[in-house]
Length: 322
Ligand code: SF4
Image 1 (cartoon, helix red, strand yellow):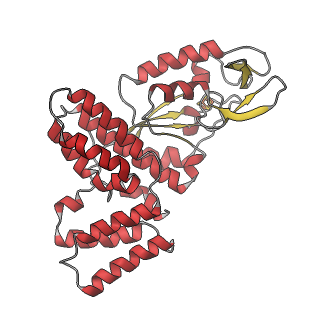
Image 2 (cartoon, protein in one colour):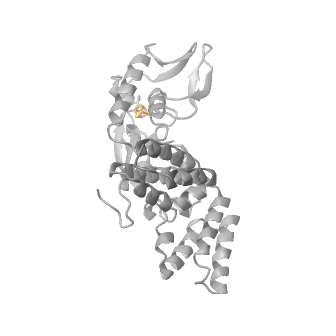
Image 3 (spheres, protein in one colour):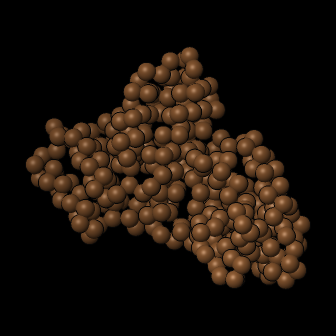
């Protein structure tokens, strides 16, 4: 396993193939996403696929769309009036079974696609009127089978908060998978939980307090069931971006470690920078950099080991824009 200097190993991420620049779209083109391919791609290993090519639609091909038929949604080829639903559903089940053999840590899907799109996909009614409440057939099977998997679309990744949250979830899930793959014990779970304490607090104190007793009472008996429940609650906890006020709360918790070490001017400087972040005049990276500078100076291993401080490789620079 190759590690970055900060100890991050490379997550394994599924991706719609056209986003990596492969010419697999219905019109023979691609929709390369520079951020996904180059920036994210420098830190993760991709598993790419194109469901429409894989089911044999060919490239180029007539486009397909989703059509409501009673209680079901069908995938119909616009030009040929051919129904691809069964082939796509069968393919999706087999493909997802394959993916289950080696856990994925996340998935980036192509927006607006009747196969890959995850959110607000057009479904046409009898009168040819679309409603934006569907999900691509492959995406639907993927998200049904792996409800904890961090999933995003290329378009939504342009939102800096959603992007930061997606990458946070991917690397957290990856660490969780790594812990589960390496002979997990109650002790290792407690260590994992301690390391993620402030990350959980920033996202959801409710979930954090739920997980505490679960971890504290962990025993080797029925440990698999317990760790499965832990994984579910952990991923639910970080499913949404952390709000500014909770980041501020966590930053103040960190300040507690520096109470004895900083003189009044140093303390005030730190509090002022946190306040500027709260007001939105500086990004999160500004108070974090100052905080880490002080923590390193005093050498506080517990605080410094918090995943909150470095949830993913720093080079991704995602906290410079939130
Ligand atoms: S959106 Fe999905 S099905 Fe369509 S070209 Fe891209 S990878 Fe293939």
